[in-house]
Image 1 (spheres, helix red, strand yellow):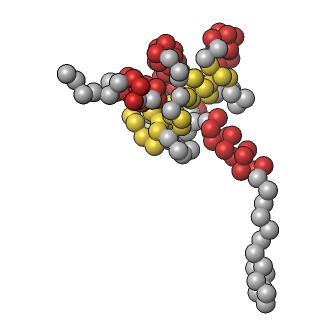
Image 2 (cartoon, helix red, strand yellow):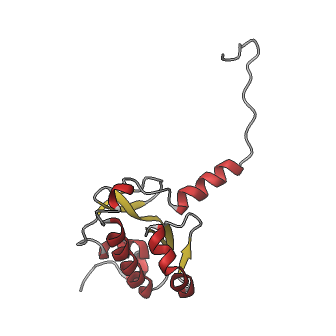
Image 3 (tube, one colour):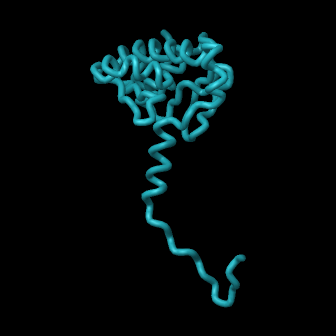
Length: 152
């Protein structure tokens, strides 16, 4: 009897990572923690920040071309910056959708004409939302020590 992990003990993000094991992608730490990423020749094209969500760097051109179809799927959220999409990972079918989108991301980002324009990917939606949350937090008043001189 196999003692391997069942679907119930493994997140869909972990299952997705396993599916990409033999793809031309390198597993690394996401530039915007927490989480892991998949990189194509140093360019991060997939981020896994959560157990049930993947972010895919498709490029604006591809997102614009497929926006109606992606939005109609009900499984993909289009992001305001236009380069990234978020894929909800709740059922096995979502993994097939993710594979298709990652294949498109590889093609879009491996084009020798486009590649020099994308040495680094723009901030993913997770990084943008984290920065927005930090900006909305009330700032604490600076600590003032009596007798201390202000920095010049």
